[in-house]
Image (cartoon, rainbow, N blue to C red; front, top):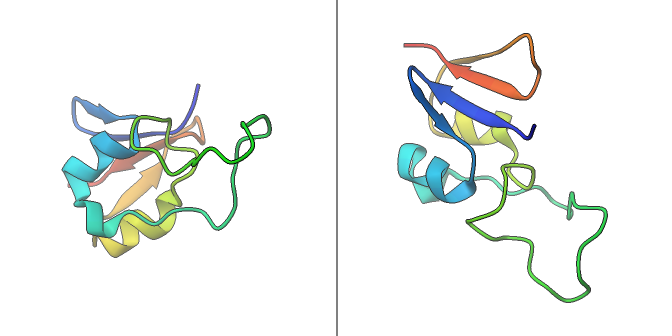
Amino acid sequence: MCNAVIDGDTAYATPGDLAKFVGVENLVWEDHNPFSRWPEGEDWHRMDLCLCPIDLHQTLEKAELRYERGVDPMEWFIIR
């Protein structure tokens, strides 16, 4: 399973979904391509991929959201 940001009953699993929640201006992309097998020259900054290319800690901090990690470290729960 890839990363997911969970706010109540809603889970955000792609950069596009997360951007609708936090605002595209708050997305913080990783400095390097996190995918081990990626076609040469193809952009990995795509909004329909999993959240692996997003720095979730920095993104949620920038959006001023409080969160906690789940038992599964891939789950990021928003605290309301």
